[in-house]
Amino acid sequence: MIYSTSVMSMVKLLEMEESLKTNLDIYVQEMQSKLDLIKLYQDSLKRVTLTTLEEKEEYVSNPLNAFPMLRRLNQDWPKWLRYIKLAIASKKIKEMEVQLKSAPIDDDLKVALKGMTRIEKFHNLHAEDLTKGVLMGKKLNSHLTAPDCVALGDYYYNQTQFSGSTHWYRMALRVHTHPRGMIYAKVLGLKRKRIYKKYAKALLKESLNSDKSKPTPTEKSEWNRLAKEVTREDNYDNVKKLIDEYLSGDEKIFQEVAARLKRKPTKLERGCRGEWPKKSSPELICRYNRDTSAFLKLAPLKLEFLSVQPMILLYHDVLYENEFKSMRDIAMYNGSMIDGWTYVDFDKKGNPKQQDRVVKMIAFQGTTAPFTLSINRRMADMSGLEMRDNMVLYLTNYGLGGHFGKHVDYVELAKRPPDFFADFGGDRIATALIYASDIPLGGTTVFTKLKIAVQPKKGNALIWFNLNHAGEPDPLTEHSVCPVVLGSRWIISKWIHERQQVFKKPCLA
Image 1 (cartoon, rainbow, N blue to C red):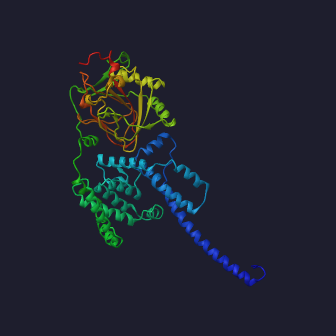
Image 2: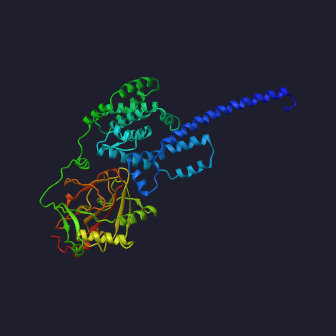
Image 3: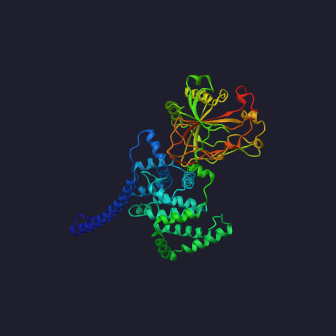
């Protein structure tokens, strides 16, 4: 049709353009609404500019920064990318998609969730305090969001630890408020209604599982049936009303009830909380060590005796900053740190078993750099033992809530595999460990049977002897590393084997 030959025909064009303009206005409004949401999310991600490696490390060493970031990259950013793609096409979207291919996987998120719950349990922390950014009485410039709280609630719920999940679902409802609630609902699919249902299910199962035992398959099936019944759509208004009444209560009441129901802390947890009294004895002295090597006669080291039987020594100020930085830079920039599992036990067949801990580690051979030689010499001076045939050093960095469960560094006689001495150089006569960073909260080394707790202090070295004077394993050397709460725990360590000490300690009896 030719419109230009008639004014009346062009009236139709006017009507057509008016309709297009109306649709464009609606589209602009929709785009503006999406842009407002994106800006709201952008504002929620604002943080101070971090330029140096030390600033970045300090930021992520706070679990209330690290956990939300890891969870966002795993759960939220892919959803945001889909949302943005619907709004606008851009080359930047492609770049973001490529970047997200390296984002944390689900297993990584599970490890982070486990680390967060470990911090919470070991130190008897409350969900409300963590949500508000309070860590062991210390107020931090960070907090948890509703999706963070739901992720923690889901973790507890899936572990059938319903009493743990209810606190987190309750906190999720408390912080799922306007305007952030729009982000959670429209982009992440996390509506308040969904959290109400999760909370109702958890409350129901918590009441059914009053003895906190693991439910049988039959119980699990029946509880799931009841949970479905409670959260039926036609029952939602009643559920919401009851939960809203529940939420009107002061959070301190919930904390008091939870405290009454909690089990007594284990010996290890008490040690991690700093509840053990400090030991005192005439034998536990501080002095300068001039005795264990000829070099120490010229440059003695500050020594503190923590225990005599077994021998546990704490040396002060034995690490140079440039030594640690040289090791850290190689580990960081060469990408050579690997997930660290230390073999501390053997099964009946002589195969090594792994411990549950969250670390990255790298091994430095004694001839790779000057700092490995100097640190090995210092460890020999401190211990009075020979290092020549075993110069390897391990640099280890603990992660979110990283810990090391109770273990011993020797191999029990009954669990020693065939050719143990030939293959392993004998048992580990001693362990040497240098703290390469300060830890503001957590990360304590505890000897559970001796009730000795050692807080990491940069430059200090801890040395203990795993075998007694007869060369037999000493069970009193059982030790653990408490979960790291705040800070980046770096240690330099090595095991010293007995076979190389034949001339240093010719008679162990």
